[in-house]
Length: 444
Picture 1 (cartoon, rainbow, N blue to C red):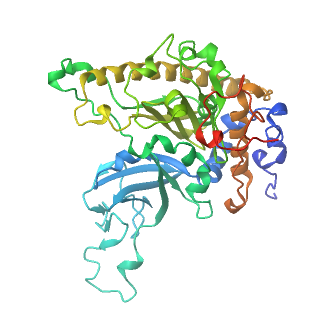
Picture 2 (picture 1 turned 120 degrees about the vertical axis):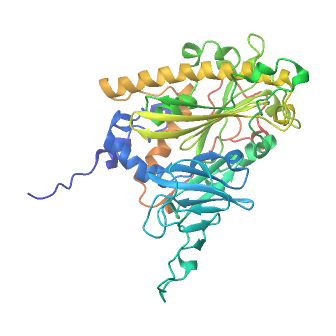
Picture 3 (picture 1 turned 180 degrees about the vertical axis):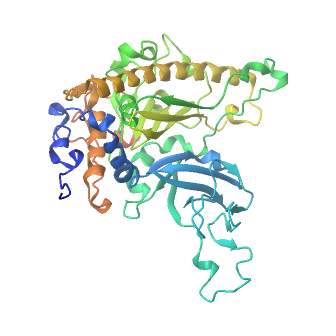
């Protein structure tokens, strides 16, 4: 029997036709994009295997000797610090391919294969091959057998990895985001040290607190990212969040780059002040000091940036219907990042942490219900709401691009909003626009 030459459904242009449109006439993605195992397998290769994927926090590799193990596009990657640079390598010994590490660990100065004890420096160089020269090989040169490198770059608090050499550099991938968020100095933000000073009293305030947490979500990773990107659901799913991040105070927050976003300007404290209890960063301009920025950095980094803390989520796509959220709270230089923060700061953090966890639990519940509906019902996608779901349409188009491009050299980073009123769906002009928008000329 002749082999089938049928084009995979996701590779058919008709699969993406509804999302390629302007948001005013666009539809969502077909259910197979969320529930089909074959689509997920292709997505691992074509999307995660070619994108700049958020894999860790820079703080996790602050000290030399730490090794992290991460999955990128179905490949296992190790990350380590060599001097002042974070490096990445395929998690496979150059001798006979043995896995170097199965989980995060401390290695000192040498990455050691557990099988035949080949040793590599943290820069990937082969430094030892025990007993290999007992019968010398003329064709063996250690310099030729270092670990296979993986592209690794850092922006702000996040470490990114990319398997495809043809993908544009991270700076081009980010577009204007680094400039847009430059006022925060995010590269200096750190997790809180959860030990209160005894003389402050109530040292137990940190007993149940943690600046990192993990959640296992029975939903496709894209549903989690899309949910974060839009605020159409805000009033019904998050009635308490809507008191500090009011729908009427939402504006789009996106320029050119592989991201989509929104801003709450101003963050409200008249009904709940959960986001305002911690000390703010110093040196913020008026817009950053009064706003909350919510950015979905494609494909898997979710950033909630407030004047006094950041809630960052790295999404790990495990299966078509399962996602692990790796979450962390980061804080600007100041009392929260002191070696021993004051008990009052630790207590304020606990208020913020509990609020975020409540909100995230609500998001998890609704994403899991969405997954069940797509998997069990599988109805065709419906129309998007232009006022609220433009970031979702932008996200969908990025998915379509990576799933259909033959080469990443053909990638077009999406343009951003035009200045002024054009392409904006807020109730009015942002009263405190970010500096990159405030300084841009009005569009015609």
